[in-house]
Image (cartoon, rainbow, N blue to C red):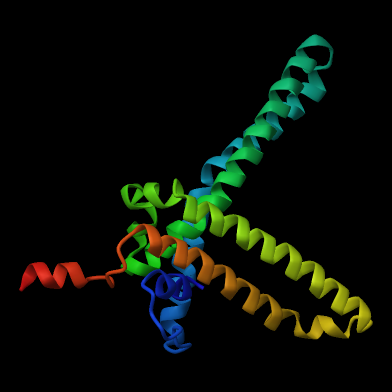
Length: 190
């Protein structure tokens, strides 16, 4: 998916090939590391909030009510942060794929114009809509086929994710230049 987002962002006509499985594995590990790094603050806040809620239920009385209120507020903040995470992560992974380096996922100077663009917002909304409608259609298909349709679930969701990757990559590419990774360095060196 990372390669598909990067290719779409560069307006490449050919989809990326499924070759060099070792490199694909490394890209997957990098993407997991980026996801964990982006989710670190919400995870820490979730554990802290859970602790506050637990302390509130043990304390009882007014103190328990205050702690429960703080805990609920903390959970609301976690939900907002998780939405922000889901919004930003595809752009970070696209940039990582474009630049072919882990640090590019944290290049907020490049990511900020993408994340604040209308094109990217449209891609997020469109991807959500396609996933929702696709998921409903697939569920109906699985019910109609008395569950046999679930055998094609991996293929269906692969193509659904691929469509989302294309939408995110295209939106990313519409905001940043479509120059391939490393091309500006080659021009400067010549």
